[in-house]
Image 1 (cartoon, rainbow over the protein chains, first blue to last red):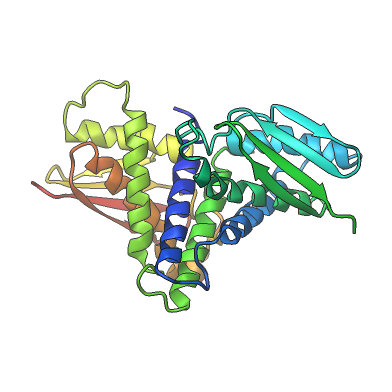
Image 2: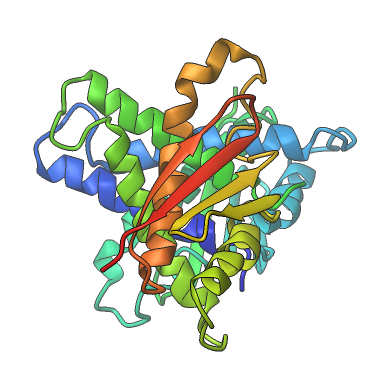
Length: 158
Length: 158
């Protein structure tokens, strides 16, 4: 039994609940991607506090990214990011070839339109984690073939 | 880093979101204990399907309860139930001396009134798990000293 399954199932319930609220016209809290993104952000902030409790200071931005790709990703998704790339000008691309929160969806193109709501929480997760490490960013996600997924991080210079 | 922490943090966000919806007057989906309980129920049903995929048939009701106390509880909360009691007439009491979803709350009596919303999801979790194992039940929870917690299961004869 994979350890991340209770988290996955709860995540699915959250998506369904939030989108149901949206359908019923509760615009104040409802349904949009940003609700999920903000939830993810707060969870990311909390997790990073726990995870870095006993670690040494990070050397630089790249060092922080490596931490997100390894320790942070493993904590939440029980695997590491498969590929990290950067243009050395503030853009990082994190590729997960088998992203856990998409692995329950069929791999065809049929459900591709539903991918954004399954990714919003995780975009927030990364943004929250980085923000508590002093890096302000915009995080977006992109899927071409499920369950592979690319997260793009644009660093916002302060 | 404890494996159950992402789940815990997400669970906290869900509670906050649902109770915020309730405050804003969204009575249709909002805020009550039963929303959380139903979410838990669906997660419990899903989990039990995964967990029992390769297990042998259960002998009897007590056998099912032992499975919930050990395998199921460990999967979600990374520990077993500490004590299982029954009156052999359809009532079971599962005691967790350090219930994970309460362990972030202060142990005093101060937050005791908030306990029910931190327990509703888990009551549903147990009910859902049992229902997919063919046992219809009503599950309630009780806290006297945090973070210890007792779940009472009343079997509904069909």
